[in-house]
Length: 250
Ligand code: NAD
Image (cartoon, rainbow, N blue to C red; front, side, top):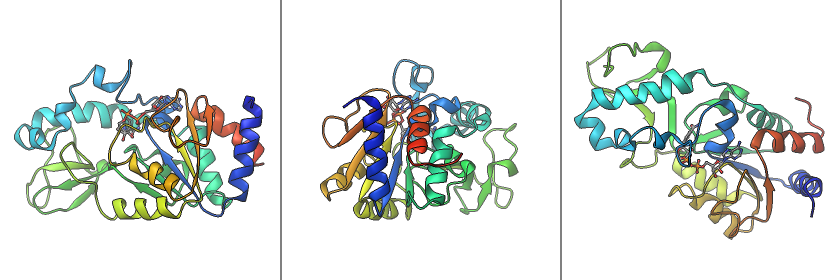
């Protein structure tokens, strides 16, 4: 099948589905200027992932926070949604998409207008006090003095995303598994399929009979196992082509 036939086929599948769930990874935000963690230009080629280990963070909060601020707030903070995020938001408005399960912590789906977003790995958008559990929007916190502390009790603040060594937060975990179980179609965008337990979600959807449509610049762990239709290319371009076939206005 050539590329445009693949796109037409995907659009037909999406139109006839009564429950479509998108599953997104770092790849969907690459065209917003946020590099993935893995690979040649990945963030882990420049930074040591140990700073995101919860045990290291608790022992060396000032050092962890210096790197966290640089990656997730100075840098991620300036990123804006790209057409791939906007197409998903429009699909939801047109009832062609029921939810998004994202592994990303960048808040770009919400910024693009998506409403039903399950953040499997939490978010960089809020911080939480490790002592009294009070939550803050990142805009409320001065990150010039690190590590930041809680204005109520003085406890250490931690970003609300999942660190290495931490469990997947509830209700995101249960909601994600429920959505994956209900999916008639799962649209997997920009994910290696290497991150557990997130990668279990498309596999579970596939096992329960969902059609898996995958968008990625290169084959992933999913491509040769559970993917039914592989759309090769960058997320923004492919999603724009899909939007055209679905007659969505952006
Ligand atoms: P990942 O599983 O998220 O993989 C990234 C995938 O994106 C790769 O398969 C790559 O081929 C693909 N890709 C790259 N550019 C693309 C494009 N323009 N269009 C479509 N696909 C593209 O792996 P990771 O980056 O190692 O991330 C590990 C974990 O950290 C994941 O949970 C991820 O979501 C999270 N993370 C989040 C962000 C973010 O919030 N933006 C950034 C980095 C990592």
